[in-house]
Image (cartoon, rainbow, N blue to C red; front, top):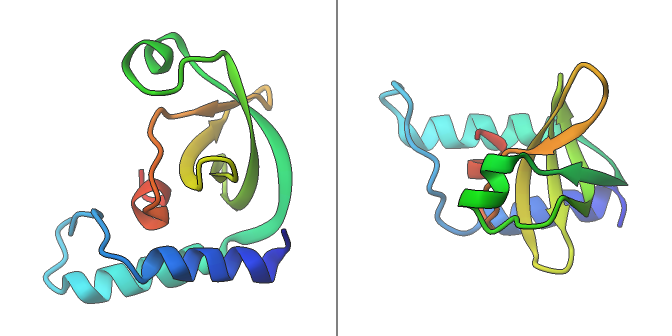
Length: 117
């Protein structure tokens, strides 16, 4: 997968309804468009990463293993949007100060909702 394919993947996700809430903005459609554009701007060359789970994540979500191999497809500061090619789902992960990547605990086909956490 390359950057162009990631952008197509995201646009495909954007073509479906999003569960992203309107957080204090009057114009939800504009809010969604602005954040979709922001996500596209943060796309990176896909790279395979190992994302770890915390105890809470293993107990209360569908992520039951200690870690998962996924593709990092977008980055912003210490947050990374991951894509699981097997399940065709997106997940948000946070990289700690020591460089270890942790899955927040959710996954869906809604890239924007996952990106915004």
